[in-house]
Length: 117
Image 1: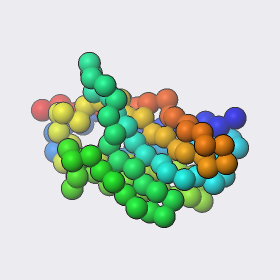
Image 2: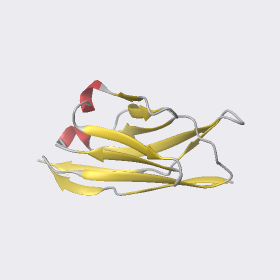
Image 3: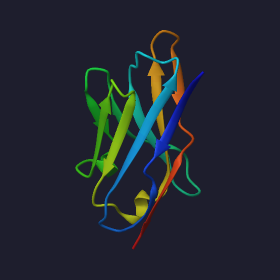
Image 4: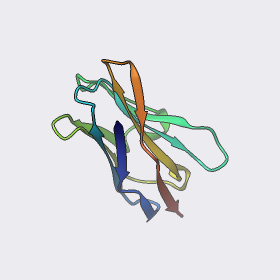
């Protein structure tokens, strides 16, 4: 079985920073894309950032210049460094990883990020 465990969420004031981590365990050794989605209160889940196996990144316009996605394949971990946080960044953040051998996508359990003004 494959599990993704997230950490690093919490409460912060506007302008602050947080770093989310998402580590995989189980039978997943080669990982294609990794990324982060978020779901604000009362809204649909939205894409935040992605990173390919080759390191190409993509960001939602709302987080460009403030968030940075990175990965460590040896640790099977994806990170999301969030700077200059705004109240509108408040959401549950979910990580995902794509396993090429099966075409499966795995999700983390979600971690709450709350930004107060």
